[in-house]
Image (cartoon, rainbow, N blue to C red; front, side):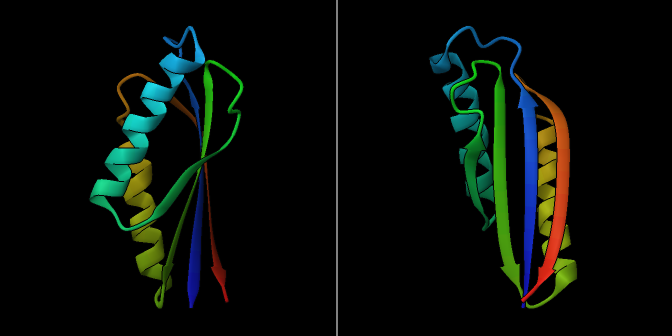
Length: 95
């Protein structure tokens, strides 16, 4: 069994309040959940207006599948309209 973990860090330049940031966060999270069968959550920087950090996890019997799914999420992250992807870290764990 393999567990794929992806950490995404965003800069949200247009966010002037946490409410503004939440709209961007919710939109991205919901699009990922609708398209891919992964677990995704905002895991850090919840109190910062212009930063958002997500954790994404997927479990599969094949490491290649984990990598492909996380690459799809990262591709979606590159196309977020109101945020800029700052950092992406991927790790595949064998359990």
